[in-house]
Each structure stands twice: as C-alpha cells, then as structure tokens.
Image (cartoon, rainbow, N blue to C red; front, side, top):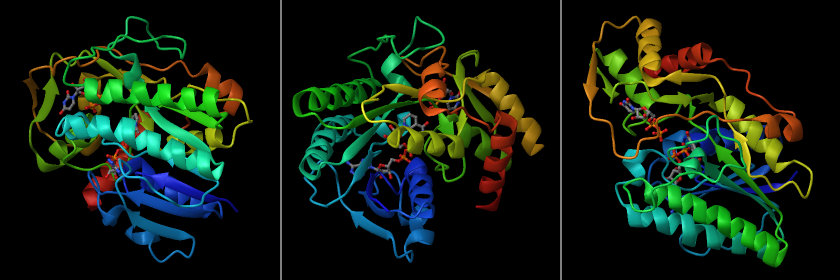
Length: 309
Ligand code: NAD
Ligand code: UDP
C-alpha cells in the first residue's frame, strides 16, 4: 500500500481518482483549496480510514511524506481559470515548483495533469505528442495554456537536473458525474440547460470539434501512467479519439434528455480551438490502455447524475 498525495483531489477528476486509489488499498492525502470545488465531492470518503483531507493552497509549500504525487490542482474550465488569471499562472508555476520540491525531498514519483491545451489551436490534426502546438502567449486562455506548458517544462527540468521520477499526462476533454453545473464547460452546460428547458448555448457555428473522454476511462489511464515502467516519462496523450462537433453534441444531449429546448447561437470565445482530437498510439502501446465508454453511454450516465442532483 502506497501513500499518495492528490492535489486538486476534491475537484471533478481528483475526487474520482481518490476514490479509485482508496479502492486499490492505498492511503490518500487529498489537498485542495476549494477554489473550484467543495467538500461535497469527497464527503463520502471522509470516514474512510485511508483518507485524509487537507485544506491547502499549493502555491504555499507543503510538507507531507508520500510515495506518489498526482498534481491535479488547477482550475480547469475556461470560466474558472480566466476569473483570476494571475492566480492560474501562480498555481501552475509556483504550485508546480512546490509539488516538484516535495517529490524531490520525499523521493516520490510525480504525475502532472497537463492538457491538450498545450497544443493551442492546432494546425496538425489529430494531435500527436511530438507536435509543439500553436498557442497564443498573450490571449485570455494563455494563463492556462502557457501555465500548463511551463509546468511541463518544470517537470522535465526537474527530471534532467535532479533525476526526478516524472510522468506527464496530456489530458483531453473529460466529462462525467461531479462536473460542476456552473463551470461553463460544454457538457455540463448543455445537459443542465436541456434538463431545465433552457436554450442550449452553441458558441460560434458549432462546427468546432472536441473528443470527449468519460471520467472512468481517464482515471484508469492516469493510474496506469503513474504505475508505468520507470523511465517512461511521457508526455502521453490521454483522451478518447471519438470526435464530434459541438453542434452534434448539442443534438445528442437533446435526444438523450428528451428536451425540447431550442439551440441558440452565442459568439465564439477568443482563441477557442477549432479542432481537437488525440492520437493515443503511445498510450495504447506503453500503457495497454484505450477508452471503452462510448460518448452516448457516458452522456447517459452524466445526464442521470445531473437529474439526480
Ligand atoms: P476541477 O476544477 O474540478 O478541479 C481542480 C481542483 O483543483 C479543484 O478542486 C480546485 O479547488 C483545486 N485547486 C485549484 N487551484 C488550487 C490551488 N492553488 N491549490 C490547491 N487546490 C487548487 O477540474 P478538473 O476537471 O477536475 O481538472 C483537474 C486537473 O486536470 C486540472 O489540472 C486540469 O487542468 C486537468 N485537466 C482536466 C481536463 C478536463 O477535461 N476535465 C482536461 C485537461 C486537463
Ligand atoms: N461551448 C459551447 N457552448 C457552451 C460551452 C462551450 O458551444 O455553453 C463550446 C466552446 O466554445 C468550445 C467547446 O464547446 O468550442 C468546448 O468548450 P469547453 O469550455 O467545455 O472546453 P475547452 O474549450 O477547454 O475544450
């Protein structure tokens, strides 16, 4: 049984990951400042003997003894990360340095939750790990995109300079139960709008594409990457290559919920990537992983979650 730190552990992805690690018999230290979450997501874990919840901001140093670190702390939806962009950069740079320092001191293996946003608005499609991306360094999304790029740089510098055992996951759009209803991401927006009978807000012409991965598949991938052979650092794309336009997503949500909401157009946000789809050959080869939950099934489970809550 390992002792595992999960930063951002009370968030959407983090709470599912904590659950999984506890089920595997590990001890979990969940660290979160509740910037985009609350205790509710991990309330069912609080009585578990292997679970410890610490309210802490990773931009401040942290001293705990662990064997592994999953660094997930960072607001992830555009609405959240643009609310206080300087804080987003601080979390990605200062926070990452603190967690790398912790891993170095305790000789722990550390995994970074990086993102497909490092590819920006890509000219290469679909995106393999070797593509360096096309990111606007001064736009409204830059605090997140460049913050995450810098975090990757720090990971590889700690690896080269200090021999740290690192893993870098490039996570593509992930969805499922416990997404926040007000975080502005497209899956939660459309489902909540459809269930409330409100118009579905389609940004631009809706022809932009995304590839959505169900949370259970993503957690499996993260655990496999963390436990992969020593020396395999990534970066490794993790996501579901099943690509849809945002318009198709809206139509599927309407069909699944039986809602008669209309679709209304809103302006396309600045620097919104037009296409995004992962090449996951590396994950298939090195982790023996590929996603299993099809979009229709994952959306149905997510609709059930929002209906119940
Ligand atoms: P989320 O907003 O639900 O979770 C992030 C968590 O980090 C929240 O609980 C938040 O309170 C916490 N946090 C933020 N700043 C912090 C700080 N300074 N100190 C401590 N805690 C802090 O988002 P999520 O979707 O669960 O994303 C988790 C991670 O995965 C993020 O790093 C995100 O960038 C990455 N990621 C997610 C997706 C996705 O589609 N969900 C895609 C790519 C990358
Ligand atoms: N989007 C949309 N309506 C919404 C929210 C988002 O059409 O109510 C679009 C958004 O412009 C983007 C896509 O859906 O093209 C995915 O947006 P999200 O914020 O979920 O993720 P990201 O842009 O970070 O991939």
